[in-house]
Amino acid sequence: NAGVTQTPKFQVLKTGQSMTLQCAQDMNHEYMSWYRQDPGMGLRLIHYSVGAGITDQGEVPNGYNVSRSTTEDFPLRLLSAAPSQTSVYFCASSPWVSDREKLFFGSGTQLSVL
Amino acid sequence: EDQVTQSPEALRLQEGESSSLNCSYTVSGLRGLFWYRQDPGKGPEFLFTLYSAGEEKEKERLKATLTKKESFLHITAPKPEDSATYLCAVQEVKTSYDKVIFGPGTSLSVIP
Image 1 (cartoon, chains in turn blue, green):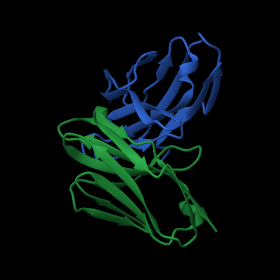
Image 2 (cartoon, chains in turn orange, cyan):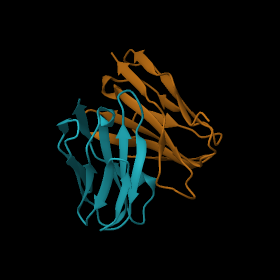
Image 3 (tube, rainbow over the protein chains, first blue to last red):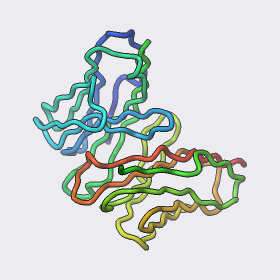
């Protein structure tokens, strides 16, 4: 059972470049989300989805896009990378219906924007 | 403004030296308070959920307690393998995951 899988693990971008962070889960979870983690600030929610075709903004959505075409996948797109987006990104999922508060996290993507 | 704070920011303990981590929160109504453990280079791993004041939960050397304004994570006779960052998060009543607020964490080091 792989759980939540994120790729890549590390990425370096130049300012203005675009890229997609991948997230996949094999637990048939309805809820999926993206967080960024910065020193001293805790995890902040970027975007989330409560099912295929349904997405919504979190606390810090600017500069990021998401889509949810399948239950399994929830990619995060950076349209034009900025140094302020240097961070560690985590994808998380949850069953939503039962044990709903328990989030399962991926291992993270460390992104540096130069 | 709803927020979650954790103290201390970092804690260094000798093996076997018991201590407590604090999580203070200000939300209009608490639906649940969660503790996660995060190892370096990994994602957070769920430990406990507490729902109401007075509730306690235990797992091995860890015990989490909850009052109306704060939660404590008590670590009894810690071992080096307990070294990690411990995150607290709260969810408001009548809201969904978009209102799960994470604290900045406490970095725990247990020295042999």
